[in-house]
Image (cartoon, rainbow, N blue to C red; front, side, top):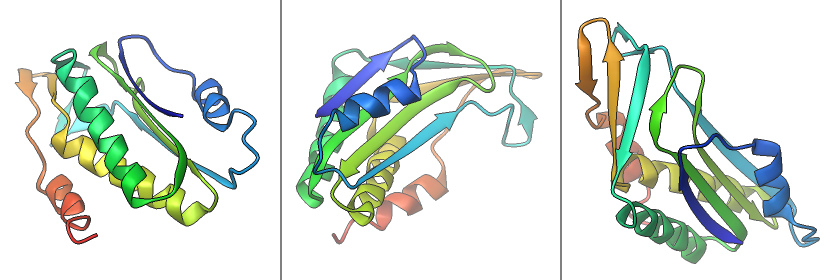
Length: 152
């Protein structure tokens, strides 16, 4: 199963992981990452966040990232669920989960997908702070995390 979903509704981690495993006895490892909304960013409190995207373009970009992970590692499955719309602190934003025969491949693929998602997926984040709304800029640390995958 290689799947991508972009949605406003929350996701259920246990349900999605169970679907990824789906009675596949070849799977020896499932690795997942869940990103959540923080109440602080760049020194300011965050009361809310809104994620915007281009429908169609976003899913295509995510599918390309997942396909690249599948070309690098022998995965049995990968799932990316990314929320859009208004979110509050503690809300889940993103789920990345990968299944493989061994943990090394599952960990590497999961990290690869989230690193590419943070830099190459067409999402725009706007935070509500005490000083008003602000767009969230790309981080140097995200670019540095992506750079480690360039030679592999």
